[in-house]
Length: 143
Image 1 (cartoon, helix red, strand yellow):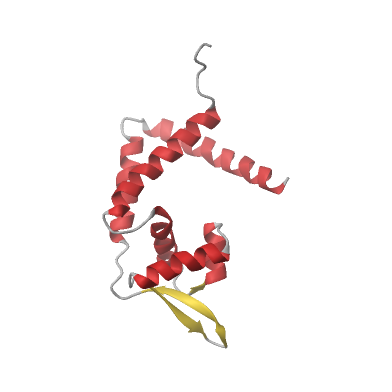
Image 2: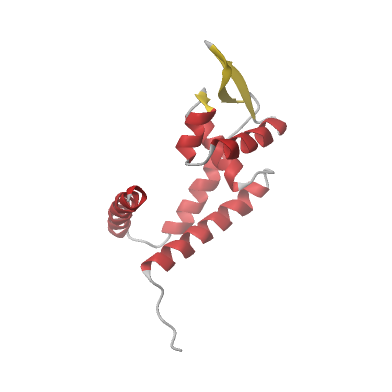
């Protein structure tokens, strides 16, 4: 059987796995997982969001978010505070000691490695194409 070239789908899956593996190696140094690091950066961008809002933003189920949040609380990185007007719901915040700068730096390092040697006009074209592919993929989710 002859080797067939990878399809675009295969290339994207391979790229995504490589990106995640590189990021995973970096966040392990901070005693985090990819999922926990992603939640931390999302909380950092949305301080005071509810658990359901964070789950929606991350496109995960609320019980999954709860387990991730429990772990971050156990590490002293995030905290739940009762929402004003409804003590049953909680707003989520980073703790005063939490620093997400290393996570953001890791993202920047990974992105810099990805685009190394690629001309600016090619990157602009890639962003346009990937943006359109994202829109098209969203249509698949609604079918």
